[in-house]
Image 1 (cartoon, chains in turn yellow, cyan):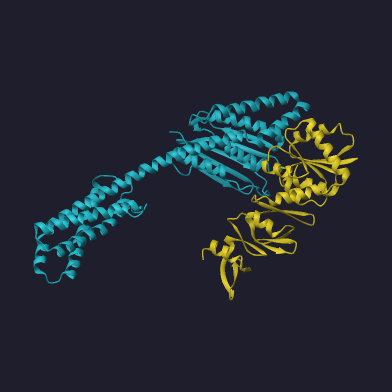
Image 2 (tube, rainbow over the protein chains, first blue to last red; image 1 turned 30 degrees about the horizontal axis):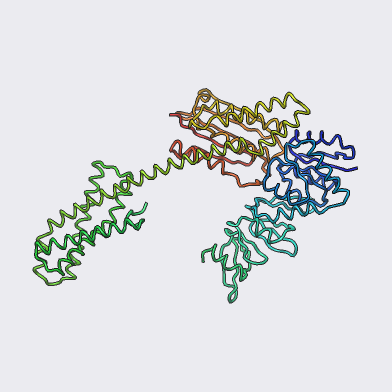
Length: 246
Length: 349
């Protein structure tokens, strides 16, 4: 028996998948969910083997959902149009269905998924996330999970980012969030006009910089508007001089 | 707008060359007809004309800022005359004093200088007048350029928004998701599937047929928007509601083509796509004096964090309105905690 979920915000699209699924007696539909949040919760609780996942959804997109998964099922993406995502699919073993899709194409995807589930291949989703991370598309929000709580942080609120071992700490005006990503990831994805990497361990919002001071001979620190002091490394200095015009 | 002789190298070179020419003529005249010694004649010419050339650069500012549209009427002529009455004596006195420093004690020369002030003042006024005329010509030519540029910009924006409309009507997300809905309906409700195909076709037909006329009837534009919303309603069901209130005189009002579509699209994108709660779109129209005022209001999920930077669609609408009606402030945006409101003022004369 294969336990499956549909996470898709349009009712008619869910209806279609449900109808296509009828012929597969070995697949049980364990639930249908209309947005990313409830879908994420359902995957972690119900631990399905297979998920039909839409990309564009309210609250949390299909990709953001992937980043936060503890349990990693086989995933068949369904999407109307997403050039950039489709490229990512093509390089990875995850299957995807382009709406509208035929019954034959659906069968093909199911056959592939069943093969992967029986082989116990869990790498596909992680590989996809990795691939998406390396594409230089700027991000507008960051999703973070702490315990069972999910926070969506607008990039506009981020003041600076600090490396902490395998994690990064993201600082906003009044809160901080820990996320499992690399500094490299944030260096690539935070908008380049707004942020600058001043140190191996720090990326700072340019408009938050209040002043820059000589700390010791040859080494500088910057002081943010709320008083936080951040070291500037030798490699960070030239870039900083350029944006601060000093 | 800076002094035209400063902001362009070519103009500056021409200015300098013309004055060198004048200096040479002045020098020849006084050395030949008044038999002033060559050195003195040259000095006289350079001091008076060089000084004038430098001082004349400042005449730009009363022209530009005192008379920004470069009008010619009694009031401005009088202003220029008064400016001249200050300018010429300042120039004469400065020139005289400078020469006194350079050629102290040469009585013959100063006799000549004292005798020639009438003709100097006359030429001074002539040059002063010419400078003003030239500055006026600069202002005219710049205005003409600006106007051409404005027109070109308008054209680009209209083309762009035509393109955007086409792209949004053929918006791949909208189109393919709609087709997917139809595909689903063929199983559950073939009648409805046919209905949706017809609506989608009408909507696409509207997109293909228009584009030439600059303005269209509000009622026609709204009919098209209703088609769009009906299709989205089939996709989103109860998540999308639409209420329209039109007071009399609005139906036949003329509005720029395709000006509402991006606003509705925005409302759908940031309202319905991002929320699991029902979103109500409200369209109001009323006549206020010579204008009609159109309000488009939608609620949105206050907890949503926008995925993409919003505002490009709105900015385009703002730009187009400003360029078409040549008036600022025709589009107002009011974002409250849970409501997003766009107000459009469309002049009707």
